Image 1 (cartoon, rainbow, N blue to C red):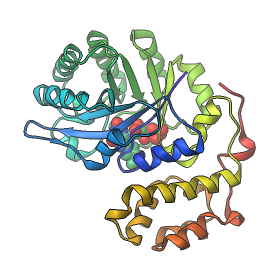
Image 2: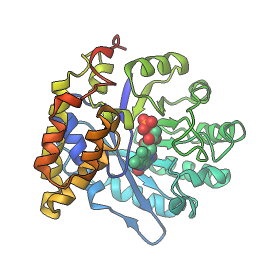
Image 3: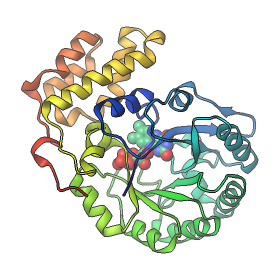
Image 4: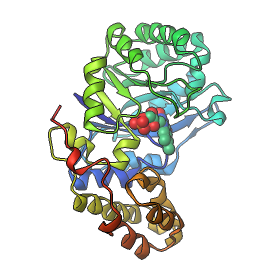
Length: 323
Ligand SMILES: Cc1cc2nc3c(=O)[nH]c(=O)nc-3n(C[C@H](O)[C@H](O)[C@H](O)COP(=O)(O)O)c2cc1C
């Protein structure tokens, strides 16, 4: 079973990658948040580049590109592959941002199948074997109509791996993911398929793998809330409340290490809130209220270290059998 950390802009960043390393719960691969590729430029966002250039975890990193013009994507894929830290290129065919979709990129690629097919074939032709992967959704708004066509495009282009977020663009992050489409992808594609969408516990992971036959999983929000999920999926124990507090403490430290030279203390707190947004269900409403308004790191440390209100919903006694 292969485990990937799903890319999340401003969340699965260098600080989070280093935190996973320090707590000893690592995926097999990281994927950067997307670099926006346009005919005029590739926006080489510094925080994304740092995930590549300063990755000390030993885990390979794929650079993700979001674009809708084949020449620009080829140019930027070559430029990123020339960086020593890049293990491969991942094409984003899932981002639902209107800003990105307006230009036909991200999930916008799933509205124009001849363009999508052409981009996939061109990237395949130029990216070395083993280094080209795709991350897509089930379609723009109608999975039953769109997904078979997406599978045809992918089958023709033979990417080395495909990650599928089992929702349409119309669903954004709501509704339920439909893993039956991932099962059909596993049956139709020659490459390994990674399942993605609302896989937050070992039980859900186990069920998804059994149901879909996927080669692995891509975990996003669930891994931010419980970063020990990778360890658990390799047969390790569920985190104790102490370990969860250690996670928050290390994340504060690593966020400081990565960003502090650019940020005020309030900025450091705001950066922490990007991760905590996915952890609030494990705190009492009073604690969440205080954390959301917190502007002092000492106060945030105090709030996060307080075991009294820690609920451990997703952790502790809910340990599952290894997968
Ligand atoms: C804040 C946020 C940022 C995201 N940024 C990206 C991104 O840059 N590239 C991408 O392919 N997906 C991105 N995603 C989608 C996730 O990779 C993933 O597909 C989605 O969250 C569903 O998986 P999950 O339920 O495990 O979180 C983002 C999701 C969130 C919530």
